[in-house]
Length: 90
Image (cartoon, rainbow, N blue to C red; front, side, top):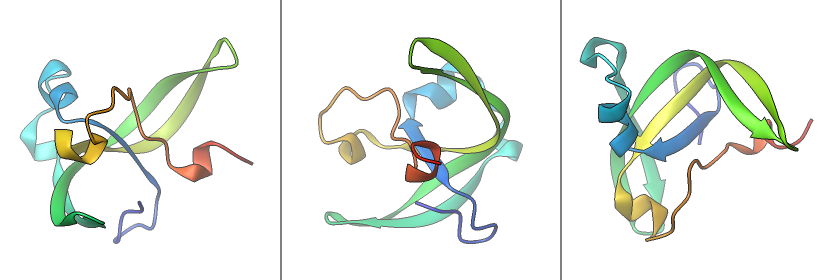
């Protein structure tokens, strides 16, 4: 998924993290998305920095867009994050 305004890739985490991380509502905005199950809107936020574990070491990603997906988006699976393909290959 990409942000339709900036064209930047969006990585998706569970909407439960929105509450855990206490993200202020004024930093959030909505984008439309579509899956095989239908269309909806997702709240996203621009994170200044995000740490991910890659090959056993922590890697910092700067200026990442995080989307907060509803449980139905994860299809009952226990994913920590759905990474955009741009973060998987160079």
